[in-house]
Image 1 (cartoon, helix red, strand yellow):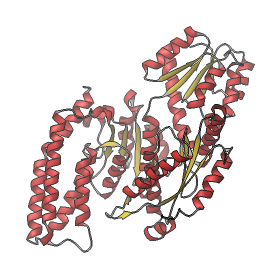
Image 2 (image 1 turned 135 degrees about the horizontal axis):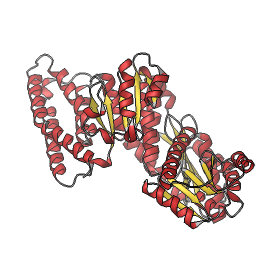
Image 3 (image 1 turned 120 degrees about the vertical axis):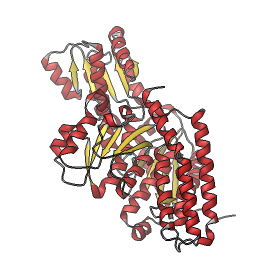
Image 4 (image 1 turned 90 degrees about the vertical axis):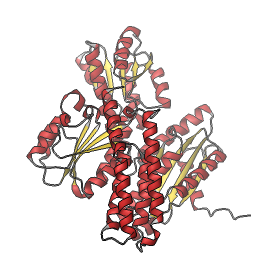
Length: 519
């Protein structure tokens, strides 16, 4: 077990060791509530609210869910009466069982803590900290809340924190940020500052701060950043090494492999294009003299493909100054005469891959939902149609339009409407296959490319999505719910549509069609 895994396991054990005290405090407040003691109801709400946050932060979502149900019950209007306190007894009994099961699991086959993403939130415990912690937990992070000005040496397990959020501001902020961002460990984490007082953006950048979020927008901005961070860092980097020189390609591939980079080898420009047919890499390293037109021709071809427009391309080989300039004009990002030190080269290439992925995510993703934006989705659809035509395989498209969305904005406000959209997008993403591109096609419309799917297959997926919307309404911050309803229209490539544009028109027409009458 790695050092951080041990540290995180220990933190979870310490959290569970305090469960008995928490249960006893809850039972004491319930007794006070029964006897109509002043402040008992408010105390119960606070205790359950804290369990909602801490359960998720320490990796016990069942505890968080059970506590949230009790918190909602306590927050109902009109307020619960002391005569109904039996409900709370049952809720606390349920929590006691969950704590016991969690402790048993921790002693046995609990998933390794090192598999979780870890965030450090340096903040005073207040309402803003609760919302920031919730945003991080919803993005999949285990959250450690530490006092302001905490340095890495003060925080157990700090060496594997991938995201650090600082809510304090002032001169000390820059020193704290620099401590978290410095060294090899800091290079692999993002440091965020929540701007409660004016921040010198240049000093913050020098200190290694990734972004500064104004306090009024901090929760929303952090939620989007955390989700994008997970998408960017959640899978291994992929690099295509396109080189007919097997010895040179092997040296580069082996060095990249040691840095946990997935390498795909190609010996010609055509083999490289074949790799791109199914997936887009984070970086392409190609020999300048690559058979099939050379690295320059490969760069020109890639820059004509909207999906690959932002993929960094590094050419290797001896080129004259004029040829190097020509390669850069063709679309290459860098020309390297010789691999040189393989370890140093691999480190630089991995950094390029990381930067390339982050830039592509910024350009291709809708910032609110995390889905592909309109232009990126259309590019994926056009590529899928071209491939279906070439291979003769089925292909379908599904459009999903949220209903009554204007009413949500009018009744709950546009900020809540944005969160409903983001939630609906997560339901779409969680229902369809990860290999099927999904995007935000309109203001309240999502689109999904269903590879190798017929119209009947699309209908089946649409039914699953409709059921998922019904099962996962949006939960408001005051404990209420907003149901999700959508019209879904599908179309299949072939007889009714031969191009991407025709597919979109056909699916859009079905969105407007009334549902079939019940038999």
